[in-house]
Length: 332
Image (tube, rainbow, N blue to C red; front, side):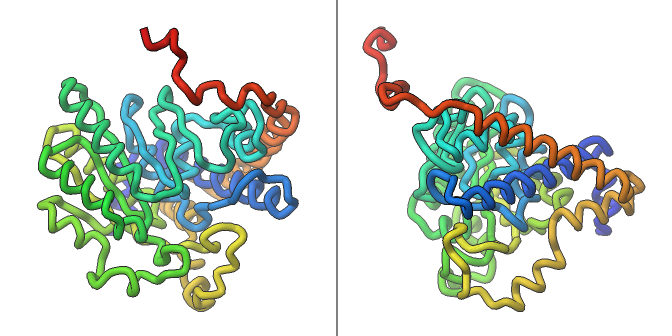
C-alpha cells in the first residue's frame, strides 16, 4: 500500500510530534558525540544516528501506563517518555541531576515512574525482565503492555529465546522488537544466523512477526500500534523486525572500517528525518519554513539543556551508596 495512504491513518499532530522527536534525538546525540570528542563525556557513546525512527515510532504508539525495556540505541524513546535533553546531558556528564544521579554514565538509565526500565550492557537481558513485567500485568488484570527490544546480535543470545518462549506460552502482553542494523559490533548478519530474516526466529515459538521499514517513522508507529493493541487484547506477544542501518560505528570510538562505504552511501538516501519530512510535505502538513522552525526550536532546547547540565553539581562521595542498597527501615 502507498505510504501516504497508510500515513493518513495517523493524526496530523502525532506525525508532527514524531518529526520533532526525530530532530531532537539527532541533535541531542550529535551534541553528545561532540562532547565525547572533546573528552568531556563519562563513559562511551552509542548513538541511534540513522535509525531514530524506530525508538520514536514505537514509543509514540504506547499509552501512558505502558512500559518499555529499551536498549542502547533507543534515545528517542527516552525523550518521548519525558526525559529532557538537560537530564540526558547531565547523565553523560556524570552529574547529580542525571537519572542515575552520577552513579552511571551514558545511556544506562531508566525511571520506573516514567515507565522505563534501566538496562545493562548484556543486550537481550532486558527481554526476560520485560516478560516478567508483562506476567505481573496479566496476573493483576491490568491493561498494560511492555515493549522490549535488542539488536540483531542480541537475538542470538539464550535469554532472548527464553523470553520469547515464555511470553508465547503464557500469552503475555509484551511486544518484542529487533533493531536490525546489519551489524553486531563488527559481525555482519550473514555470519550470525542462517535464516534470511531475523523475524523468522518467531516461527519457532508460534509467535506472529512482521518486517518493518525501520527508517519510516509512520510505518514503525503503525506496526507498533497494531502489535500493542493485539497484546492488550490478550492475544499474546508479537515480534517486529525493524530493518535499518547503523550509520556510525558500534560506538564513537569505533571507526567501523569493516562496513563497506558504498553500503553506507546507499542507506544515507533513506535517512529517517528526510523521509519523514518528505512524507509531511506529501500530506501537506509541513513546508521548509516549518522544518527550519523545528530545527531552531530543537537547537535552543539542546543549548538550554547543556547549560543546565554544565551548571549541575557533581555527586558528593557519600552519595555513591545512596539508592544502591535497601534501607533496613524500608524493609518493614
